[in-house]
Structures are given as structure tokens and as C-alpha cells.
Image 1 (cartoon, one colour):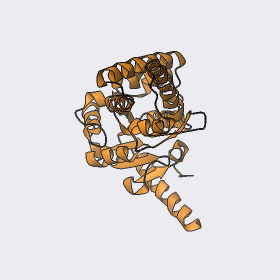
Image 2: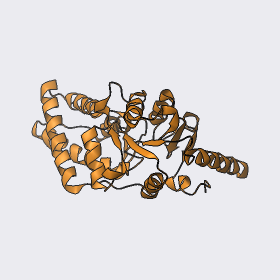
Image 3: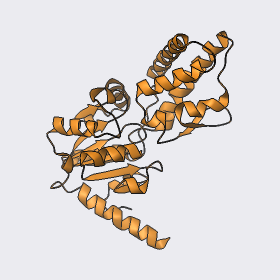
Image 4: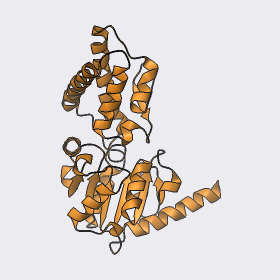
Length: 266
């Protein structure tokens, strides 16, 4: 265990030396959900709202979704009360586009016995209502250490961009709720590229707009898809954050942005 910890500390020291070296790194590209903001608090609120409205609509038609089906819809973990408490970093809610999430939900509503057209109408109405609830509550909370990391990047003259599977307008809105809009030079959502993660399109577009080569950038994200995107684009470093990233898919995996702030890896 001591040897593993020593190797991890050495690796983080190397990563930090590269990260804060302005000769090699010109920009940091960050995923949004689960990287900049607390995924469970944001999307747990949203999915709970969607499901509440879905169940009301289905009850009016004398149909219902089985509770056991709900985790499969989103790729989520729920407590005994049905509230979302965790998520699969490789699942549809974390990795899918909003259109893909809609399609999965429509399919599950359709499986209850309703027509595809009615299922589609119900889902879009429920998502609209959930979006309105989220706009009122604004449940966007930065993860620990994010603010300090962004500030240090700015101090070092490192450009910042968001690359997210969410739509660009949504991403901009969520950043605004956290007071972070001005921190980022560019916001790239899935709607701005032909192919989303794990393909390199978002990184390549961000680099083009920043005027920086991919080999001078770092990608930071909470899924293997983020890491695959960065590697496919030719980024110098891919850094995973959290337990959802396999060590083999990234140059380093951290548990907190604090490990990227002091240059020591501690």
C-alpha cells in the first residue's frame, strides 16, 4: 500500500509539473457535469422531477413504470425512497446526449403499453416541466476545489473551455447559476459538433476556436468517454476525476481538484 501511494504521489508530481508549465500547456478543457458541478445534486433533482411527472401522466392512463426499471432508464442508483443518490459514469445520463436520454425514456414509457406518439408527447411535456422546476431551483453546485483551480489557471494565463455532452445553452445557463460564465473562453456542447464523446470533435472545435493545438491542451473529466475523447484528439494530458474513470484510460486519476493546485500532488 505504501508503495502504491508513493507511486501515485510521484505520478501526480509529474502531472502537475506538466500542467503548470506554460511552455507545454496553453488550455484546459473541462467536462461540466460531475467535473465542474455536483452531478447528483443537479441531475438527481432533474430526474426526480421528470419521474414524478411521468408517474402522474401514466397513472392517468392506468399504466405505471416498475420501480426496478428506473435505474435502467438513466444509469442511476436510488435509495429506498426512490431518490437518486449516485450514477453510472458510463451510463446514459452521464454520457448520453439529451436526445438519447429522451429516446431511452420514451422507450420505457412505450413499454408500459402506450403508443409511441403518446409516449413521446408525455416525455417531452414532463421534461419541459422538470426544466421549469430546475430553472426555479437552480440546483448547480461547484465541486470542492473547482473555484481555486479555475482561479489558478487564470493567474497562469491558461485558457479555459467547457466540453460537455449537454447542449451549449444549458451548459451556459448552469455555469451562470454558479457564477462561472466569465471563467471560460469557450463553451462547446454536443449540439455544436457532428459526433459527441468519446469522439474528438468537441476538443478539436475548442482548440480551433482557441487557436491552440490539441497537443498543448489538457482534458479533465469524470468518465472514460472524456479520456477517450482527449486521447483521440491528441491532447497532451487526460486527467480523470472520481471513481468513474479507469486508471488505464487516463494519464492520471484524481479525487479532488486540490491535487492539481499546489503542485505537490498531496
